[in-house]
Length: 395
Image 1 (cartoon, rainbow, N blue to C red):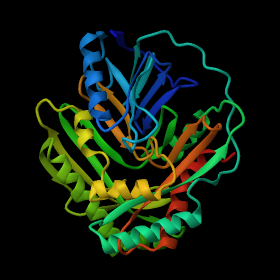
Image 2 (tube, one colour):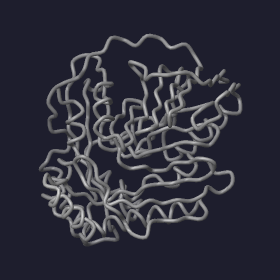
Image 3 (cartoon, helix red, strand yellow):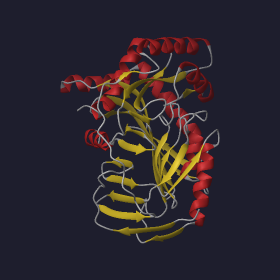
Image 4 (cartoon, rainbow, N blue to C red):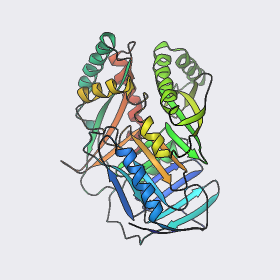
């Protein structure tokens, strides 16, 4: 299908009820309606999406008066964690895109935007999901035993919470709350997946790419001195250093297949969020000729930060021990453009809107399990990570 695309500078405000968003302080993308939806499933889903987007770019007619990252042919991306997921991986081309970035605003128009159906602000209580607290602790103990008795070094296990809904939900208030509380995270709403992720998977601009690895977590302290001590303790924690090293080495090894001139921080730094400290490492490089952002992501995903090490064995353990379909949780989410720019985070600190077998919100939180892990401590870590989504719907 060929699209008629026009990008132009214009004073712009965030639309009242966007259908897709990807926000971070100083960089806001709002999509209204859907001009086209590209979808795939299976082992080659990311490469297939890349090829479909490439073909769409070749057939579309573009009047780009802006020529900035995000103008021209643009798509919101949500890719499932697992190739076996019942959910589709998608690139959603919005009918109308509003971009407010670094003090500049522009609009891309493709199709007419139709009025959204009446929606209500969701509220309620999050209940235990398919993976209960006790079930999560049992799964964690099983994973520890497998680490001790196999080649498995690390596996990331998640648990879920559910909030039943009565009526078509308006997720925008929750997105606004997340964006205001976590301005330095990547706040997203794509294909029913939403959240405020602290973890950048990969960013590309003019062939230059960057990524941020997060692995290792501690709760914030209320007293400044205690809080600083927690941050220092995180940096020297053997368990957290162990978990973080796996994630960094895995990313470097994989990214090295599609990038040149890789550079990493000499040592991890403590990244402060309102509720948590994370160990973080930034990685930078340059895409090899002919490699697109989605091509690179097809090599990277899933990283050790959301799957484990070795990757294939960790994915098998996740499939055995988690009683739910992650869908887009822990998968790449963000945006791409035909000009080669894009920004993909990892879909964390949120959940998804589900319509079957009932209308509900399912939230997710996960932890990296290594030999030094303790099931009670890992369960407590998931509660820390659920703070974001509970806050989003707290009325």
